[in-house]
Image 1 (cartoon, rainbow, N blue to C red):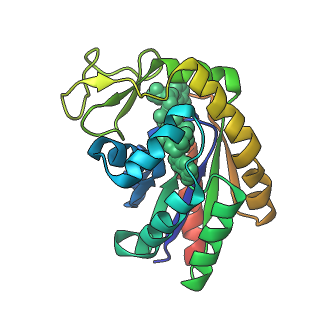
Image 2 (image 1 turned 45 degrees about the vertical axis):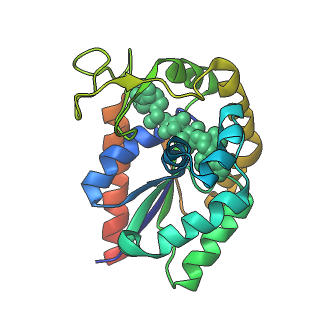
Amino acid sequence: MSELNLILLGPPGAGKGTQADRLREDFSLPHIATGDILRAQVAEGTELGREAKSFMDAGKLVPDEVIVGMIVERVAGGDARDGFLLDGFPRNRQQADALGEALSGLERHLTAALLIEVPDDEVVRRMAGRRVCVKNPTHIYHVDFDPPKHEGVCDQDGVRLIQRDDDKEETIRTRLEVYHAQTEPLIAYYDGAGVLRRFDGTRDPDEVHAHIRATVATLRLEENL
Ligand code: AP5
């Protein structure tokens, strides 16, 4: 069976992590989330984490030298050899070129760039209400739109839910500016390459999931034809 090499694109708070958590189970793909990797490094106090923290807290991108080699290596080996779901990478043209070159060097190609579209004012509302599991940050909730069964407690791990450090209103504004300036141009880049698929991220999380799942299932069938 052909591999699925997928990236999730979209503004902060579009629901990339929410959908990735569902899709990785549907298609047995490793979910590689650069934000989660960086936050784990910050929590462990590694050199990489110390370097990344000030950029993350300010809502800016960490420098390419910090992230590109790490992700390219991750995509090339181990459980990602048979496909992957990248979330948060690439975020600018340099990162997209680096990913493309790494894949062609391995005689692989990107199956699709899955774009989740959400307007800025909705992003701000979502981030203010986002809560994540203290043990596993891929378990994501929203106090109004996707609440846990018991307030403040992760459904899957039974532990405390917390707010992310970069979910403050002024940081959210900077993250949106960075997205529009640096990441949004990748929409045209992947559209030009014929791999862009668009999804309306303002719908209910389960509806968004159903649309993306159906598209990816079709892409997999087409890859196998
Ligand atoms: P990262 O962690 O990647 O953050 P992001 O891209 O800004 O995306 P988010 O995780 O904030 O949002 P999401 O789209 O995953 O939304 P979610 O599913 O949580 O990056 C953080 C930082 O790390 C960056 O600022 C940068 O500094 C650094 N970084 C990371 N990658 C980098 C790279 N490649 N290069 C350089 N620097 C990098 O959903 C949001 C909320 O909405 C949740 O509460 C959820 O429950 C709710 N929700 C989800 N879907 C719906 C829906 N359909 N309807 C209603 N509510 C919904």
